[in-house]
Length: 517
Ligand code: NDP
Ligand code: BG6
Image (cartoon, rainbow, N blue to C red; front, side, top):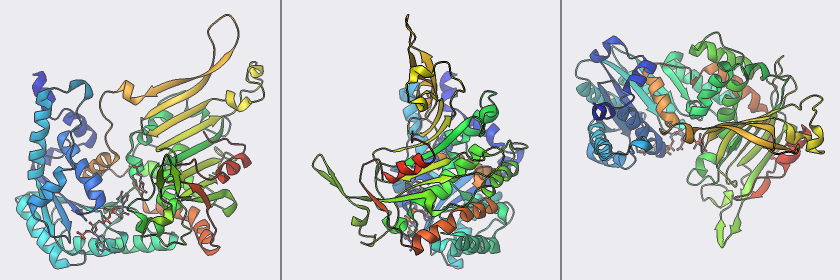
């Protein structure tokens, strides 16, 4: 019995409850077409996430996965390519041989449901052939179709046009997941939205920001709204500043061509960090319904003051030699112009002009080729008024303030820094962490963000996808700054590969009496 339970896909009940498969599920089928299947994102994230969903029993009984791209490939070649990326998420405390056997079996079953169709992105004829192929696999059932656009943005519209004209479902739903970048400023983003809406209704468009699918970002609302102790403190009255920090310990390796046209502000700040900020700062939504949550997020974004040049520091990494190894400069990438001024690092101070957050600096920092890889939210609380124990901290009173850290990745954790007495007869104070360390608390691996988002798109759950008005509000905050940076050709502060980034970021924080965590 135990073995059967473990073999049966473990958490399928959990998925079905969460996803709410309907009673007619057996009569319908879902076809997921990965457009751009030969590319980096498809291999790295999308196929592995689809397999993980299958392995966990989260995909509906009838489904087909089809890779679509221009490259010539047979079904067998696609399966071979995909098979190299798959892994099973096995509970670390239960690695028994039959679980591993089950993993191989599941991979084979999954691969047998994957097919490939080669075609151009702007050919209605090629998409019409895809439609025929999908119909064969759908076997006359009600068919729901999900297209994942994992292609460069300049061909989004061609692909959407052809998919909607020639391969959309005749009797079920058709949805399209669109990957960032959603334009590069307010105007181009509005133009993209307008073009998408020629072929799709807003409720068919799923704009992905994969940070919204990360476990600890999802947990933000739970932390705030289901614990009495946090929400009352969540305002200017008790919070001194909030820091949103993203860092990678590698450069733009392999993606320099894309990156140079966008830079770190568009790549990370305007979307991933801003989305976290909106979730962090929003008022309590009326319900957990997607529209209610997104309404609250938009209000935050629209209450923010657009960024000014003086609120920002930009940097770019330069070559650095350490331990006999030379790490390249950003401009050493062959796809990047030698005189590029594109920032690979930025720090910014943002403000929300509403009653809850007036005057509280929200500091963002994002950079590539830094000393560490991490993403975290740091909430620094105010000093304790009239603190009886101040003398224990000498002149460094900031050290005594509480700090809540939400470590989004790696090694997910939520910890609260508190002051406590060092045990003993004297009265010395210490700083300690009350720590929810996920790896210690939960034995099962945390799902990848793409799994949650794909499952939500299949289920029509829009909570974690970006609505067009959110996108407009996000661009309005950053567009004037981006234009000014480019028009004035602002020279970035150079920092060595593998360092902590430009020193200017510390001066910026110091202006607001903040010390980076
Ligand atoms: P790729 O550059 O790997 O492109 C995906 C596929 O699109 C390629 O395999 C190729 O397939 C086709 N393609 C590439 N360039 C062109 C072109 N100029 N004209 C027509 N077809 C082309 O992209 P990624 O997989 O890296 O990314 C896909 C999307 O996801 C992009 O929008 C990207 O910005 C976004 N993204 C990517 C991330 C990543 O980590 N890779 C992270 C977040 C977002 P074929 O030649 O076989 O048709
Ligand atoms: C993508 C950016 O959106 O996010 C990349 O385009 C970045 O530049 C990536 O590397 C980081 O995602 P994650 O999930 O690895 O932190």
